[in-house]
Amino acid sequence: MSDYKTTIGLEIHAELKTKSKMFCGCKNEPHAAEVNQHVCPVCMAHPGTLPIVNKEAVEAVLKVGTALGSKLADYSEFDRKNYFYPDIPKAYQISQYEFPFVSGGELAGVEITRVHLEEDTARSQHDKGEGSVVDFNRAGVPLMELVTEPVIHSAKEAGDFARELQLLLQTLMVSDANMEKGEMRVEVNISVSKSDELGTKVEVKNINSFKAAESAIDYEINRQIEVLENGESVVQETRGWDEQKNRTFSQRVKETANDYRYFPDPDIPKFKLSEVEEFNISRLEEMTTKTPSKIRLEYANLGLTSDQIEVLLSNVAYIKFFDNLLDELPKSVEPKFAGNYFLSDVLSLIDDVNKLEAVSVLEFAGLLELVSSKTINSRVAKDLLPEVIFEHKSAALLAESRGLLQKNSDEDLLPVVQKIVDEFQDVVIEYKAGKEASIQFLVGQGMKATKGSANPAKLLELIKQAIGE
Image 1 (cartoon, one colour):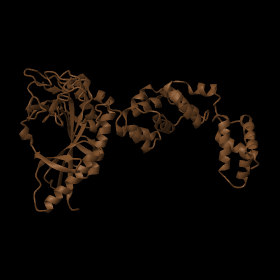
Image 2 (cartoon, helix red, strand yellow; image 1 turned 90 degrees about the vertical axis):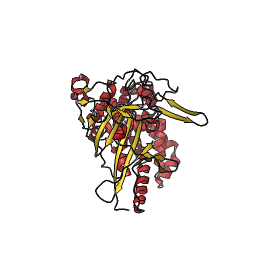
Image 3 (spheres, helix red, strand yellow; image 1 turned 180 degrees about the vertical axis):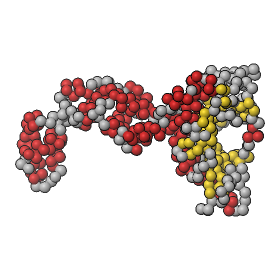
Image 4 (tube, helix red, strand yellow; image 1 turned 60 degrees about the vertical axis):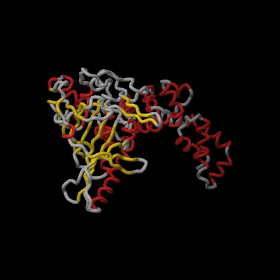
């Protein structure tokens, strides 16, 4: 089976994070608790209604294209993609065919064919024992579709690309791209062949996670090879993914572009993007200065590790907070040091990422300066952290008023050391007899006596002197 060549192309849809729907003024809230709450005559396809293009959605797609290094079309238009299904009230979907907004580009080493804009469909809900409901809250939501060239050759490569695209969409803040909520949906086209010519393409839909996409690809590769090895032909079709059975299943024969009878939508004016002031290239480039690849390079140059960078990239709120922190950080504090404290200590106190908005960046930066300069030690910093970041209190004032500023002088620490050595003579004898761990107990008693304000290294030095070592 190793002499078969696998070729994979991806079609990825992402719901755009706009205030209103693609062609009407309804709220863009596809997950509203109440069914059919955000609907109007336009998205319900009442006769005589006319669509109006959402400029914010167009801008979002152009931002993605700019970040991908793609060619942005000057001329573009919307088309009608004709097919009948209960979740399509018009019996056609407004999409783009011949003149997409974005062509070409590259991400994670994968070439992009096109990125176009369309409207999402309604959602069919099938309740056990209660029949079916079509929820039109999602109908008309702006939907970006990205199509790759067939240049992917493994499930891992496909999964890595999809994850990187999700990061890009989230970082640009054009989509939340949550796959579990259907805000990002991956469809894979797979073919196998023993020659350089492409084999028969099979599309797999209904994939709701990156892991499922990779599993579906691996299963489909093996299935198609088995079909060919049995002397049969692979059928060009659309298949679904059954996550329970971990296998694909046939849904329908694959449609072609001709089946959809695309034609330009006569109700929507053509686009000449160079005539729209908001869409000029310099403005779009300014809006895409923060992409995952640029952030990785920027943070690596600041000394952050790749693990730290990937955790920061995992949530836009982390990036926003850390960038604000870098702006407030004194030059004496290393960004890597700040990253360690943020990712370990601050995030351990945050059970909801939205709470980051209430954290004082300025006071946290002040705390980091005190630790970095050894004005307070790490134990004191951990104790003060909640008050500093949540109650916006000055770490310097707190440490001074509570006697927690780090003590480094012999004058401050010698009385404490002498008291500990006198009180714990049995431990001193154990240490002198060769029990190395005993001296750490004495250091711990010194830290306790000074409420954590002593310099542990200085304590160790003075204790050794006091016991005659």
